[in-house]
Length: 89
Figure 1 (cartoon, rainbow, N blue to C red):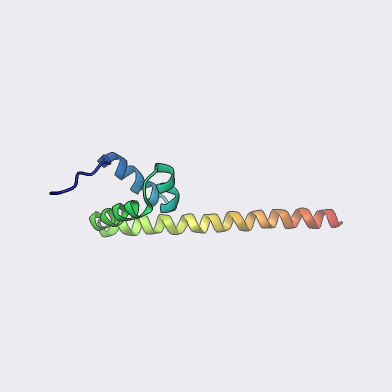
Figure 2 (tube, rainbow, N blue to C red):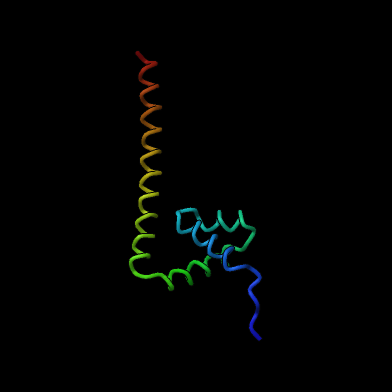
């Protein structure tokens, strides 16, 4: 007998879209109160259903978000360094 999914399709799609937007799977799972393994299964199933163009776009978004975070961190470091050297003068 097949087990009935206790989560709605909308709930699953929302969770997967948050992961695709670049939020860590563990964080999304904790926020939604589900097991990370469950969310991982949903993401894998969603990727199988994506077209090649959608997969590439999703990967590009993820890459750009990481690049943005790195640039923000570098910018913060430069601000702190500038403040430090300004105090030295």
